[in-house]
Image 1 (cartoon, chains in turn orange, cyan):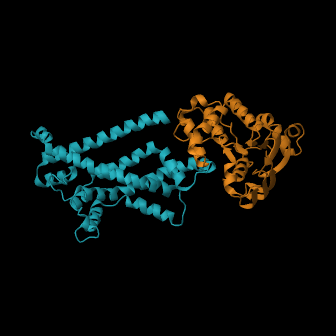
Image 2 (cartoon, chains in turn green, red):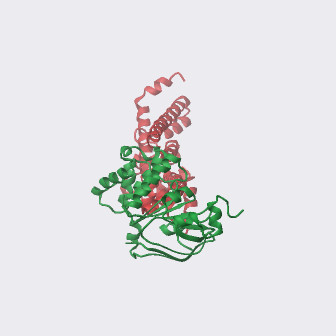
Image 3 (cartoon, rainbow over the protein chains, first blue to last red):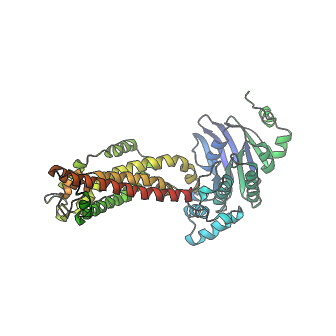
Amino acid sequence: MILPLQLSEVTYRDIIKPLTLEIAAGPSTIILGANGAGKSVLMRLMHGLLAPTGGRIAWHESDPARVRRLQAMVFQRPVMLRRSALANVVYALALAGVPALEREPMARAALDEVGLSYLARRPARVLSGGEQQRLALARAWALHPEVIFLDEPTASLDPSATREIEAVIRAFDASGTKVVMATHNLGQARRLGDEVIYLHQGRVLERTPAERFFSQPASAEAAAFIRGELPWV
Amino acid sequence: MQDFPGVLAEARLWQIVGLSLEVSLSAVGLAALAGLPLGAALAVARFPGRHAVVVLLNALMGLPPVVVGLAIYLLLSRAGPLGSLGLLFTPGAMVIAQTVLILPIIAALSRQAVEDAWREYEEQLRSLGARGMRAALTVLWDIRFSLLTVVLAGLGRAAAEVGAVIIVGGNIDGVTRVMTTAIALETSKGDLPLALGLGLVLIAVVIAVNAAAFLVKEAAQRRYG
């Protein structure tokens, strides 16, 4: 177990204000907030792509290699390598140190999971946006991480591709992987979130079960955000 | 110009064309083998003095061929440190000189290409756990179609230069005479039709190589996106 993840007084330049947060195993966590609230930066800090300028980020597990291997991230715009869909997943498995003979079966299983088996041999870069994002999910999923960070995974997709992605995310959640997803899409937060962390100008204003967040938000900013108003105008 | 067709028929001419291609393609192959990974490494590495290295490498693209020829000549001459190899005035010496000449071109241009691509790939590759040279080579391989142009720039320089090969090769008929040195010689002898004919063949060969490379690149890019 690498969870829980503990952020203590974490800052990042002037984007994230001193922020203390614990991410524990269990139901999915949605990080909700307007554009510029600091969601993406917070995701990158937790995933380890950015180093905090202040404070401390600590996993329960102290071995950095295990921490790296047991978490994955899917970006808003996935970067696919110029090779087949299958080879993209195999590449990730190779980096994670999976023995050569086990890579292809594992990669095929991951593609199967997201419903992309029939495109395994197709070059990844010529797939549609939705297919590429599902491939990114398969690539992240292939190692069965304990935590998966999703940074607005459907922000550049159409509604039908979004539905497919959400179905995959629900399957991850059901299999016991901790889903931490940033989004500014209220409908998506409602559909996928068990708890909501509401981020506003680099601060956590609320952390509540999703149901309560939508019915009775505690802060005026969150209430305004839910009503679809921009809180700073 | 009447004897122009006769010139083309000469077996000697084709021997010269063949040697030109052999020397320049060998040099490009060696320079690409060393220069592409070097450029990629420089693109992703961060160390003190990196900017100075980048500037120096870019500047080396403008190395005068005669200066490279002279340096290799001194290294390979009988009294030089590598004189015992007996390479001076052989095609081998010409390959070495051209490799030195175009290595900076291939390394500098691929450094720029990989660095531009790195902006797109960095987060994703770091997230997947690719670091250092592994990440650099992944990006290098991923932009392989664009790098074809980099290699062609090197080939163009090698095929066109005369200064380096004439100094270390000596323009010996049947041994180290290539198209550019033959053109220089025929021009100085006053045989302008022959020089012109050779020049046209040289240009045709360069166009043919570039056209082939272009077709390969287009086909591959359509396939892989």
